[in-house]
Image (tube, rainbow, N blue to C red; front, side, top):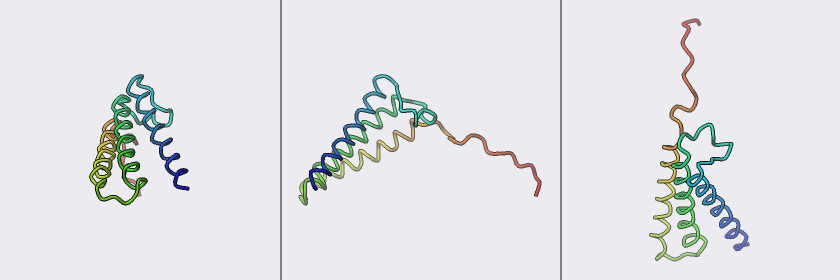
Length: 107
């Protein structure tokens, strides 16, 4: 069962990194993200950083076993993943819902 989890995680991290590489090199973003993303290259860098952070956290960390010497590597992975989240927020359009409805004063 362990190898199924490791294989699945490796495929997901590779797909995430592939999405980042495509976004950085071509500026293409998947259709589900196009409306929100204003800076596709920054979105790609955030995807690459997220994939690296997940890889650093999962593979030397919990999937490897209980080894206290690998804790700093796992923590760097978590910090890199958090930094990728900040980059992803920076790549999106501000105020994603549009203007607030005007108050008509009725009611």
